[in-house]
Image (cartoon, rainbow, N blue to C red; front, side):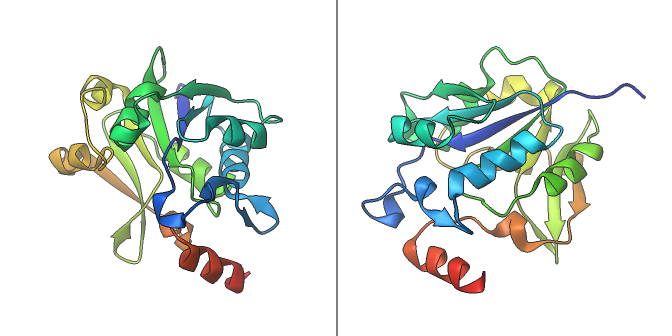
Length: 195
């Protein structure tokens, strides 16, 4: 079987509004910034290339990632919602599939990413699954790229997953990391308490 080329797009453009004044992506969990942990996992995985979509406070986020072999894309329309970052990240990208990774999921590991990539099927949307629930990150096959580029709003690609529910392939992942994004101070404190 031919090896499939799956690109990774890390969505790191949002405004962190629920966190208050500070950009949540540069806050530390486990001694590393949230965005460094997320991008580090993507870079250590079989994803190629890895792109990071920046928007709010982009220079600060970029500085955190200076040592990572990623390319940066600036989304000028980040305030219009997550869909604009998905579309920006896809520009001039030629791959069999794209994994979209939320920038605020520091517990996603390269192992989890590779488990999903290994299950890639060019006819399916690959979604991690644990204890009856679906999580992130998600891989979309190339035949859906043109539709992905038309999405809008702040629900990301969820409407597309619902539209093609028959084509979703759930991959069991034995980790709660697929649900653990950090939106506010309470979640950050809970996570740091668990470490």
